[in-house]
Image (cartoon, rainbow, N blue to C red; front, side, top):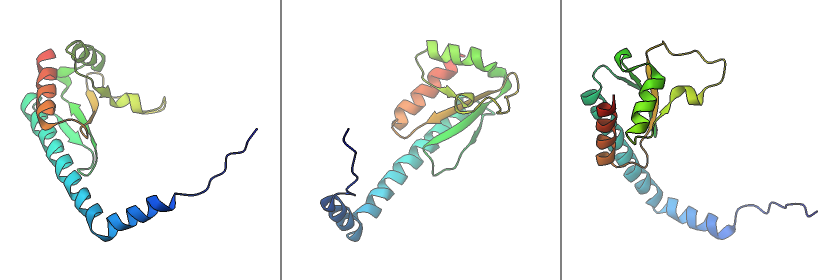
Length: 135
């Protein structure tokens, strides 16, 4: 059996990245991404406020996901998830990211982890509207 040998990062990759950083291209790219993600998060928060009044959105504004807690009238969570799945909307409950010892949500509360990094603002609005129509 051959042993894998780690030879480090290729010198050319390192040199190209160093040039990218030195010339400010990396900072510029980060700013472009930050603006895009901020717009998507703002769109998600606004769409949730419009279609699910009383929803609470948590998670840092610099992230790529938000946690939405919907008012109890939309629960229980299993029923909510089944209805939106039937409507063609892919969402994951917060409980999918926990372990057996995690505190359970109140019986009728719906807690969702909503990723927005690769979803356009238009698709975010449409997806939240479709969720609201489904429930």
